[in-house]
Image (cartoon, rainbow, N blue to C red):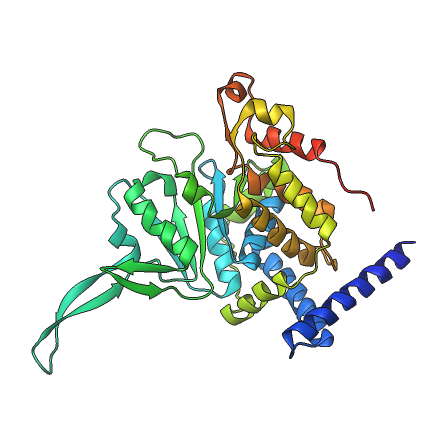
Amino acid sequence: MRLALNRRRKCYWSLQTNNMSSTLGSIETADLQARVSRFQEIEQKILTQVRSVIVGQEEVVEQVLISLFVGGHCLITGMPGTAKTLLVRTISDALGLVFKRIQFTPDLMPTDITGTDIIEEDETTGRRKWTFVPGPIFTNVLLADEVNRTPPKTQSALLEAMQEKCCTVRGNNYVLPKPFFVLATQNPIELEGTYPLPEAQLDRFLFNTIMGYLTAKEELEVLSRTTTTAAHFAEPVTNAEEILGMQQLVRMVPIADAVANYAIAIVRATRPTDPSAPDFVKKYVNFGASVRGAQFLVLAAKARTLVKRRYNVSYEDIAALAAPILRHRILLNFHAESDKQDTDAVVKKIIEAVPVPRA
């Protein structure tokens, strides 16, 4: 029975790729299958390199990689000392991309991120001219460390880069390198000296990934790796051009209308004003997710499909990624706080309340 199911999936994938090849013209089914095989090979090599440095955190690593394959940004929330910065740097090394880090502080200015124009004198003519000096945002992987410690004026400069993949300095528009990812970190417990991220900026992050504590066995492995003379580093296994091709491949993964409608139903159920919203959503939620939540849910599910060695998106892909995609897009009210309900609990109830379409 499982063999028959796999054959049906392969036939479905072949049919979808034939349709896509006729639409795109120059892309053939064999080429798509070769690209899928290469995608899975590179993903496994990246994972091997990351595992040589990072211990545990399987879900976090998977979600960060999915955000890179989709071309989105990821917000990593975790306690100090949980290897957030090390994870980002390790993944950047494995991808073979340019990595830069910005330590966000209250006195950080927008030009400290984007760069600025300076006046230089031309040695040949003696005339002065404006010269643009790029800031650290001109990179492939940008680590925005403790992103909630900088004021809104500086956060807005990062917002433009995240959404438009460019920045504006003195009226001039500069395009950022491709690919461009922002992997931001924040501390969930410190409130003094922090500036909560505005909803518009939170909505630009594909995932809000929670990085928790390791198990006792995993912590023992960390000690054995980090308290000796042995050094562990990640080696590059791919490049920017391949990653851009992987992002294009993710968007070509087929998804059935029923699965897409399931994703839409989950997102619409987060809105208290929607007729399909459950009673607990109307009680606990002030504002739900926008259509961008549904877009990211489908894109991330497509990437997860390739990572899991499957041919089309399933209901399980949608349900598995709902929490990290929706937890920062749902704004709870005081009723939820008084009843000790957080966004993860609300999303879990929504998954249970929204029925899975029957074949």
